[in-house]
Image (cartoon, rainbow, N blue to C red; front, side, top):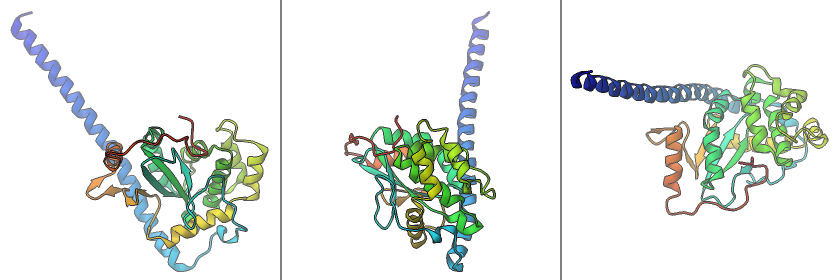
Length: 276
């Protein structure tokens, strides 16, 4: 092979490699845009319906809840939340969501690994606020029943694992499958050690129903227009922060900027945090 041909082959290989890198970058961006567009689209619909529901005076099944029984380690007072991660982490990621909400599943299934990574490193602690927006908008009780079951999982020290299972297996928004306690108990079997008599009793008795209602009341009293609503240290970051669209890279960047000059958390993870 002549030197000229060798150089031409090398150049062609470099061009092919560069093209592949460009294609890979475009595909990554495309996936982010698809997820973001889907989430924003559903969020927009949820916002409209949510405002209508809030102004209509309609009731959902959570209105019948009894005495407030907070799950183990719950925080927040009038804005109840389940904390996860290291309690001394320098930044807080507050996530308001509904287990029937498809936009919430889009968010969780796309950013789950990143959030777990940030929690494990001590960069952020997460606070999950549970809402029943879809029950109020579409009827049914799946949002409430699933939220109560998640709170029961928190009692067992397995909130994060069960929370993730619920979003991975989320039924269609119009299918109120999570209204059935048997379905929630069936999914608990996917979390080692969760399906116990105590968990089943908690789920079937609706032990934390009133606590979930209190959390949903806080959501309705807020200025949020839909779920998910995600804040980093009190500043909204979903679907964007200022002019920047949320992405894995931007989420990590925003946390790094917020934590500049601060020490990562080192305390033992909050009760119910997944083992990393």
